[in-house]
Image 1: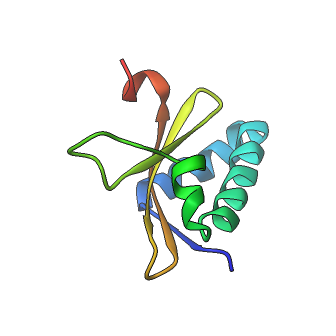
Image 2: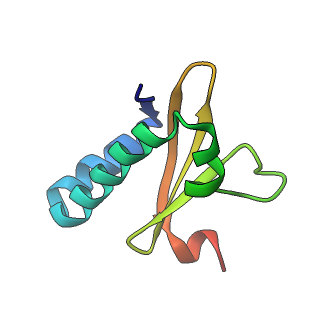
Image 3: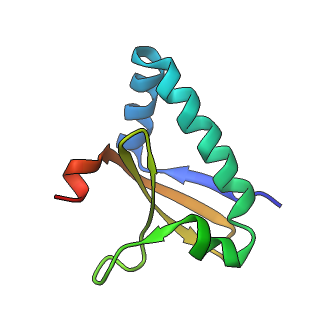
Length: 94
């Protein structure tokens, strides 16, 4: 069973703009989101596919896509991925 995806309103606007400006990056991101939806259901994949931030951001997970970082949370009980931010890698790790 695939997880549901929700996202911050600002991120939704950012992704809509990305779709109009860089369709290639948007397509890659969309495919990665689809993969995340299907693999989040397997608990062991949380550790092998998604990276975790160190404290105090331990509730957040992240993956790298095209030199950018997609930050999200996973709620196992609601079977939900909540997308928070999609920012350049250098803004997250400096």
